[in-house]
Amino acid sequence: MHTEGIYCVQFDNDKIVSGSRDQTIKIWDIRTGECRTTLQAHNASVLCLQYDDNYILSGSSDATIIQWDIRTGEIIQVLAGHGESVLNLRFAKDRLVSCSKDRTIRVWDLETGTMLKQLIGHRAAVNALQFKDNRVVSASGDRTIKLWDMETGQCLRTFDSHSRGIACVEFDGNRIVSGSSDQTIKIWDVATGECLHTLSGHTELVRTLQIDTASDRIVSGSYDGSLKVWGLNQGNLLLSLGQAIEGRVLNLQYDYARIVCCSNQSRMVIYDFAHGIDTQFLM
Image (cartoon, rainbow, N blue to C red; front, top):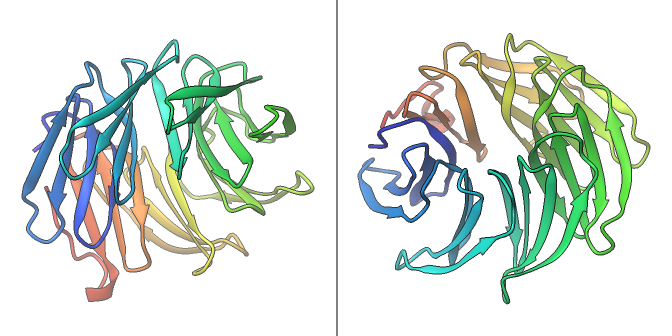
């Protein structure tokens, strides 16, 4: 068990990987719920992570990013450069993009561990990011979303419609979906900058969301403890799970049949829709 709140989670058919305020990353067997491995090297909360077949990348309140070998748990490298907490990161192949409370976004070469670009323009903490090809989308406490060219570092567009800070963002190349402290989710057209839909229903900050273009779904989680499923194209509410987890929903992942979410109460819940909604598995 994690001993404090769980900030980030990712899963596949074999495992769940979670990062916590207790400074550890844990790898769990998704079928039995047993903890297979505990990784510890950060000296503050693990705020974000992502893994693939080879590596886990984790970002922390200690302002560092660690690259781990997912099989052995060995540390491959530590990336230092951010001045404050690393709030979100995404990687694909040899490119890593991270964002921080220090108001910057950094682009890294994972092969060499060098920082390639620093994207500067937000006026508050950069809470979340996503990238596709050479386009980066970032969301900030300054109430704006920015679209960047990863190669040049140029800000291409600023999206401004939320009335409070933005906590989470997703980007599929054509649309941006954002969740905010103003309790709404907004869907944006990347090409025009137009806000296509505003989704209302959560009663507190929308902390986490994921879009799935193939199934036309948005799944969102909020500090109000609920999970909601929306239509991506129409912005219509399809399903609401009231008190989905004890405490505040801090992160979620969705894969057609399942939602895994985690909370500030050191719990994770799996909703398995393939076996009838609400089949829960608590750790």
